[in-house]
Image (cartoon, rainbow, N blue to C red; front, side, top):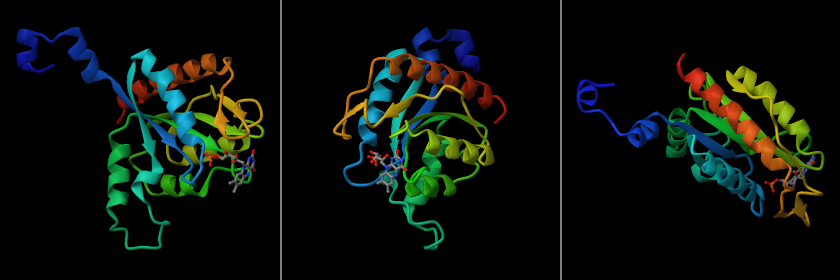
Length: 197
Ligand SMILES: Cc1cc2nc3c(=O)[nH]c(=O)nc-3n(C[C@H](O)[C@H](O)[C@H](O)COP(=O)(O)O)c2cc1C
């Protein structure tokens, strides 16, 4: 706390806003017709009700990242992507299963930053025919290399029972508990890891 703040104090609301963690909800798919925005907005709706962090949707598609190594790296989206990640304290990855793994778009976006990922926490919300479990496990391996601490609780959504016609997202009520438990862990670990950065 600065000298003036010590003298005059701050309101509790001011203190809380300033110290709140910034958590990015990262949409892992970029294809036309993707369902990830529906899933991301659902997670954000649950997260915002908690009031314990600043949650925002981070859409990889907005950054127009080239395929890594195919350009001179001067595209503004590359710097903007790194800046966005640098401003975040933790992440929730919205992960969809493509050929038993994560999307190429998410892998490319992961590869496009290094320090901006380090010493931060992440939760995973995945979907697919088997809840996106195989993709999520691949992502956990990548998180280790990027020094992202991935939390244990992992909501898994089924293309068969949580979506109508595989496209209209209608999540079962039971996932709410898991999403909140995952967010509890992400917020706790993000706060803890902030102290070592
Ligand atoms: C290229 C491709 C490969 C896929 N492979 C799998 C898969 O291995 N396992 C699975 O459960 N679903 C698979 N799917 C189905 C996707 O999980 C489903 O289409 C999902 O909606 C994709 O997420 P998105 O709509 O956000 O892009 C695949 C879809 C695509 C486009």
